[in-house]
Length: 552
Image 1 (tube, rainbow, N blue to C red):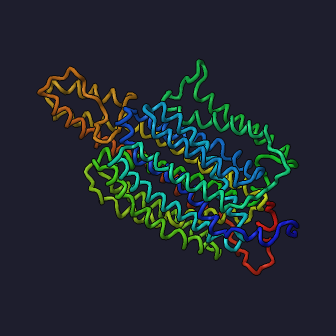
Image 2: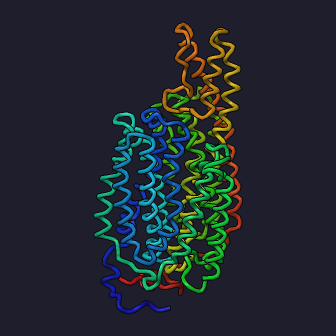
Image 3: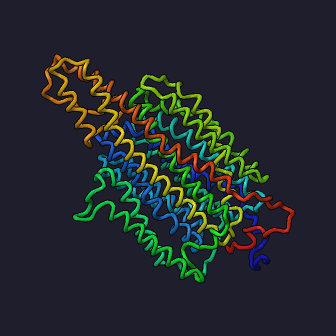
């Protein structure tokens, strides 16, 4: 393979790859920051918008749903029309949607604007990995991905701490407004620094494959999210949730068949990518990591604020040590991955992360102090910092630059599908556990009430677990009936609050076993990674991707 003519040395060296990396990471940082900030603001949004747990789950999942559905298409569009163009368009859409989210006055409005945010995030994200793969030579990608991975640590720090500060002192709206200046600065930097690369520019988009993938993913994800609220029954007239999920699986099967029969052309999913065992394994591991991350932190954030009574800022500071360790360790993990140790770095990282979060679950009680979870969070942070950079390096190392956009879109899609399934599964399991655990705690604590107040108390708890459960900061999960005599009201409030704290803690501990099991399986899966010596700068390997495939 020889480098194409018509690309001068000056043009190739016009912008430092590291300066481009800063721009890419800033945009990626904004996407991750939004996720972590939204999580820390869940209790306050629930209180301010009078949103139930079902609506809160949709505020989170509406974004992830659209994000997952569009990622493959966005990655392919980046190949066809250039990652710079798609990156900037995604930034503009995401920034504008963030401003609209901050102006929302109801849960329904916020859900709609979160959908638009998902469109912007999907357009932006695949362009980061594909551009890094193209502009960095193989022997430097591990370091670049290490920096990219450390951004995840920075965002997880900035999200809870900055988000906690904004929510506590200014209101939940500012968790979205903060994206506006970051987005504007990143757009300007992208216009100046990013090279106008073109990959596969003379090919056409697979519109049939795009339509099938979009419809299939939407039906599957929608069914998973809406299953529990509809009791896995009817959702659209006579159509049931099970039928919606089945239709999604069927459409995705047709999509895969279509991609197979058109493999000689330009399919949306190039099956040749999955011939690399490492890429196929990392696609599953990436999905499992996202499942575990969203599944673990959703109940944990509610627990810190609604059970332990921490403010949003205190909750953010409580989890900051985990994120800080992750940020510090990630670049070292990236360099280790360059030295062919990525398999073992990733395996150890996942094992430590799983062990740390298991320790958090064991330490969680209804009266735990702000720093009571610190030992588990430190272990989890050490493991988390060893995960992201090796994962991306192992997944993308053998991907040809001409397929970088498609591969980036695929691995990001599997990650987001894992997040969707994790959020839906953990949310459904948490709601189911709350019914049983709150009922048990209510029956136990009812003995502390006067006989006249016991039935109103049990009715209030039963009503909450029946679908109107609120988990806002300072709330007790249930609404005390208006007709309760005043002399019983305070006692009823106290017992109801204690019941919610005990019931939610027990339900959380049982629920979090699911993501822990998924993470443990992912750690074992890393043993199937094919170990190899990474290419060096002097080895006769592929030419620099920017020289071999980039066309200005």
